[in-house]
Image 1 (cartoon, rainbow, N blue to C red):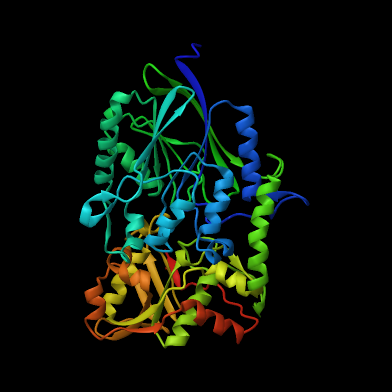
Image 2: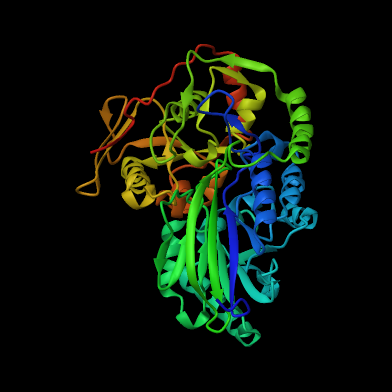
Length: 490
């Protein structure tokens, strides 16, 4: 093989790390799974073994851990500096602490954060560095960052920022950048996206082959793959969520054709058999953890058993608890609690203040609205339809007394009852939504803000949902919620 014409590259990639900094025990005694110290140890090992190594992160480094939320992401950026990623793109959760704070976090990062399609409206200027060209062993690698509709929900809070949100518009942005740098003899073009695996495939299908995109490294839908998908000549990969695994491409690039001529990919489990943990990084993470533990390691209640939230697309025992708390505290017909706002898979039986903050990190407001039975059925029909449950939609947990039965074959809501009585067209019902979900009600719930406000004035039932949960848990013990058939799919 002509070593000047053909070059081998190893591309390691993560996405949706969500503050999964610490290893956990798993399997046989003494076996550790995940954690950034082990990831860093593996990165160090591969960087020593291979000549041309890139580490890429496809968004959502932030949220999911007390270490992150206590320091509003600054701790995460410092920790990620230890890993020294070559390129990172924005995920929707990078905006959770607000736009000004995101720009502050970018300054902390010692690595480039790219995004091509977020704009400052008034000046029609891109918010972030749109791309970066890395020269690796004489080959030029173009990395472009893309985020679409998933981030617009967060941006509703900031009227100064807009995005080209559609896939067609994203494809046009990619084309614009690729056309501008085609003369630079780009050898490899990688899109770093945070739009979900299904949207990645749609984007790949509409990209002009003349753009020369070779690979999409994606995130947002937390997809676990057996092997990458190939669409329109573009390889598409994703690495689940957290740090229990890392994606690895070993590719050969042809300098004459600017294309990948050989490749293999593996989703590699991260455990203590993979590499020696990075002791310095572990020490640094522990320094943050000690501060968090001192502040938040106080017991607030004990459940009768562990409550779980394994998948946000389905009713869960933990989701039922949160919905019950809000419905009871505000006297509601239905409390809609965003499944994605519950940032963990289990809680209890012992519950500390830190556990609560970790599992329910978004301290949002909640407001009460009045709707008709027709509108309530419309909402349930929207949130329960199959396209909304692909990992890229917005799903909800609801309170005791509600039973919604959805017919998958007919793609329609068979029945909706409240306390055993059918929801009727002209009756009025009180519902409550988190501030985030009200701002995005048309997209996420199939009902507009004006429709929600039409029958009666809304009012804020709490400015801090987390305070409501904390107060409830402190005075209720041996809680034993179950998934009991509130949301039924036939």
